[in-house]
Image (cartoon, rainbow, N blue to C red; front, side):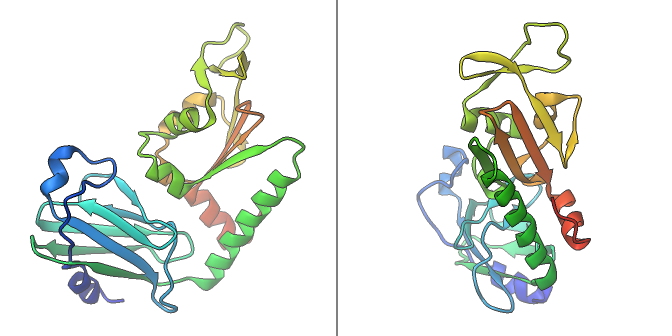
Length: 238
């Protein structure tokens, strides 16, 4: 899809009275940008695409049906859309007060898309092989939560709270897990991090592909988008 075609498509907005998720009540009178992200070749919805509009540095998660919404003042905006397995899309658009809807077409990278799926399947098989349950959260869930960083997201979804460790031997924060204060190990892209839980506060949800939580919170594994893409392109799998 050319930039001119996308710009034409993006000059379409829906008016609505219900405020979008995670936006203030003061935004309720603004036009509601309603978009759908689709595969340019097949026309199918691109599930879990991440959309950035303007300079707010705030990610918006498209759903399984490729739909997303955000309220905006009329004006000029830069729109970016990303999803592993598709070419990153960036364009500048003019949005008017009476525009009515948009469709964004993403160019697929079939080989990369297949390899990302293989990577995800490998992680799932490894989780299923564990004797205890493992909680897994993907990029869309983290972005949709509007948590300011991944540590907040994990604490809210897993139900543990960061706390000081009872022994001086521990260099990183502990967490209350099932009523006990225990040390938490954190790996980033397969490598242990000395920052422990503090490392999770340095990432936004849109920067990660997936988070796995083992043992109720005793071990947290995070995989960045950049890492998963690099692994998939080189056919390296966990």
